[in-house]
Length: 432
Image 1 (tube, rainbow, N blue to C red):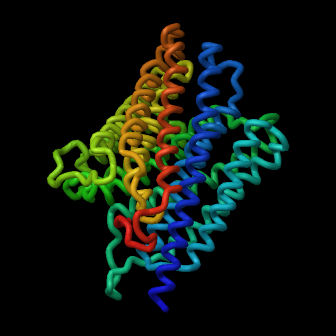
Image 2: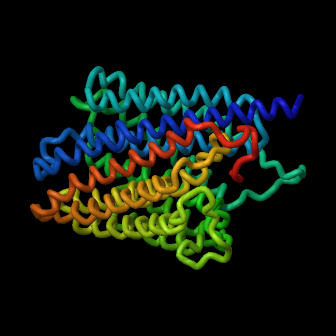
Image 3: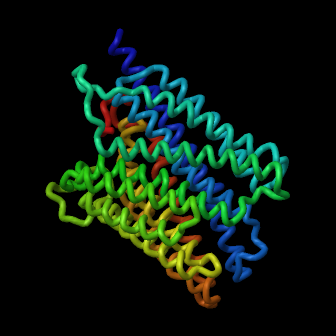
């Protein structure tokens, strides 16, 4: 009976994480990337940010960070932490409640920003729904206990400390989001976060939780998937401390100090994870594109570029071009490339021990994504800051290239999830 119950719970968890993955893909393609392309084409046509709704830009950013990456993180968290702490039947029901509230909250946020219909009510409601969904998730996974086979208290692993820090930053970002939307509803004529506040919030929303989550999962998975040496715990803890100090400085408006701290933190994290060092074991690329290890390393190069551009922006940005290039290098170059690489490696296994549909589509999506990101970062600064005409013509090309990459990524994962798995869904997947 116990074995049957565990098997049923495993299947239920796989269905749950599949729902989160599909929802995240929908947010990625539609309100995330498609709206971003629309915004960039509009900016390129005007050769200026003037006249474009800041609410639309913020809707795009929210859908990308929270609607896509946030949804993936919550879904993976429910699945992996539930398995690490023993299969918990109540995690499934709570997971579905979180999914419903989270999906509704993200959808309301996007629609309120774009249409401005009843936004004074819908914007705070969307923030409240997201916060409640996350609190249910947090209360559920925080009860997990590693299965060590011993009653002795075990030391928390470094990668878990990074994930815990990421989760705390996630919660702080959602609390700040709720507070900002309440203030906007009472005092603003449009659902637009003021630039000075949005600039601070973006550091928390980007560097605070998704970057730290990637560092944590990299510490857990890269020694296995890329055959790297075990990461340095001391180095990762130093990187964590510097990253959090940088985020705090940014929240206080000290952007020059913040960006320097974030660059140093990123370099230390890359060194601690041995990302750019030779593998000591063959990389595990069975079932995925052989280029998988290369793109993981390329993602880390983008992180260092994003941090360096952040310093440049703090000293020299005049029209938003350098800040925009830095954020794009971070969100698309680092975060999206990492999700395209690691996600297509682990998500099929989490969703019922499936095999990725196409290695070629995986390579094409990662290649086009990075090519589009390169075009965007290289052209955004001369276009925005110096009004170089040739650069303005490249920006729409970069947007369409990235949209194509995102579509291929979503197609590859979508077909993977639609096709039946090659063996029963209750089989034990890749170590989480």
